[in-house]
Length: 222
Image 1 (cartoon, one colour):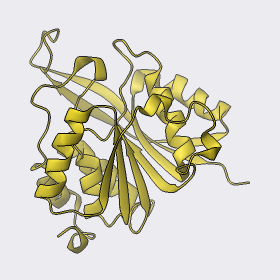
Image 2 (tube, rainbow, N blue to C red):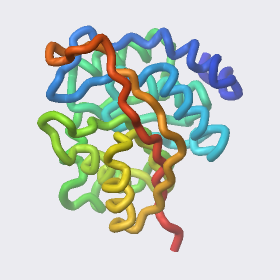
Image 3 (cartoon, helix red, strand yellow):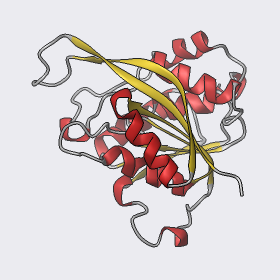
Image 4 (tube, one colour):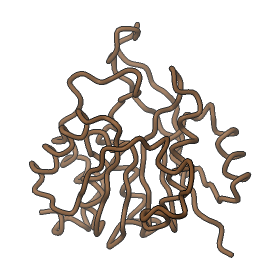
């Protein structure tokens, strides 16, 4: 099925991604806010149509969650996707979604992204093995301050080309300074509104719109 859909329009992709099952009981400590079909489709269509960073590419999805980005990437022609997540429950949902979409080119790994490349990363068999890394990392707003940059560091070690990620707009200056200090190019592609529905007990409103940057990071060419 996926191989037939590489040229689909954004709205068509979004329609398919509506069928991806999400968390019944998201975990607050992991900041498990699913990427909405609309945002996922916007991200993936831009990666494909504007930058040609999906079709035939090796892709890693950090914090794969329920798999909406991975599944969408394959629909737009990604050659192979490796999804990584610390949460076994999330991976179980993701695997069910992959089976429902009849996709064979996604593998899942249960691992902590934060410690994936903390030391000796250049000896890892995954070092620079992926063309493109996609992710909707935890924003680090609860108990995990700095986790967004830890995800980004892991992504830079996995990718030999480009990383696409979401970060709170309020942290833009900090993220761009980090990228510069790592000698990495960073382009804010779009500013999006992330609708966080009333998922956890501490949420007082039915939903809150969070301003989020969609950023493309890439290694500087020598």
